[in-house]
Image (cartoon, rainbow, N blue to C red; front, top):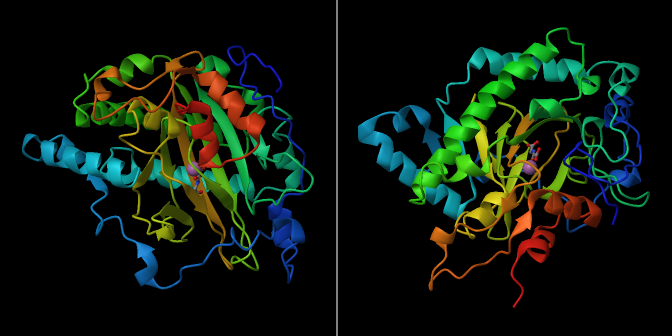
Length: 367
Ligand code: OGA
Ligand code: NI
């Protein structure tokens, strides 16, 4: 394993092999997907086209209305609903979150504009080996592995000392100011949600606040160009987010996000302007498994491009992660060991697999 000091710069010590850009592949209007992108039979997605196959968050009671949280008469019920969603699904959607819709529209526009730039311009911001910031394809660890049909632009947002403006596009011209404005809003919402998570588990309201002092926040724009055979590829292969909470903006029209539960993949029906909130692996540890991270992936579309924007919220690298003592008792034995956040990040990238089992191997208590 490569040893790197994560406290000074965000370097995850995993080398990265440059690959061709999928935007360029898509422009060639191939009649067949190149072999390197064709997933194994087990991994290939079923593409849900009829509305009946969709996971409807409203029908499943996993939509949290932040405006109700602010009202005394609805607050308790809304928090109870959130707790149930976190226990059963590991994800929910939030509406009336206070982030201006105009800012969301702008963010999606500038994201698409960036990925539509000529390749040479985007390559000024290319990911460098060992660094997860920048433009390109992450998690490329071998020449033989199957690749995802998607590209990303990743940026570290907080703590601000870790921002590396070399990776921040100057085109479109309003990229930087809007990314900054959105991440300020997202940070604020993440903090509110963590306070609600604590409240929903009868923990002290500041339980997480203490742990998230000087929190680490990353943004990643995911771009999935149209693909001639969406049934053979994945835009983003299956994973559980390795952070505490993810706030994801989906495309309002083009389906893509799929969640895994009871051995079944379900496409999440978008709710315009809602944010999809995923419980990440670190919250699974901190809640001693009460709230479980959700395994999910993204599929592609034959005709349409799709953009999603994730904000990943986690404690700083040096923070110790462990289950809340309040959530351990005779009926709820301790499921996870203590570890330092950066050791988990390093282990994750060194293993080169997104299997959730690797997380249990790293953090689970071995009997
Ligand atoms: C992610 C993610 C899903 C999507 O970025 O971690 O799961 O729909 N994205 O792009
Ligand atoms: Ni994810």
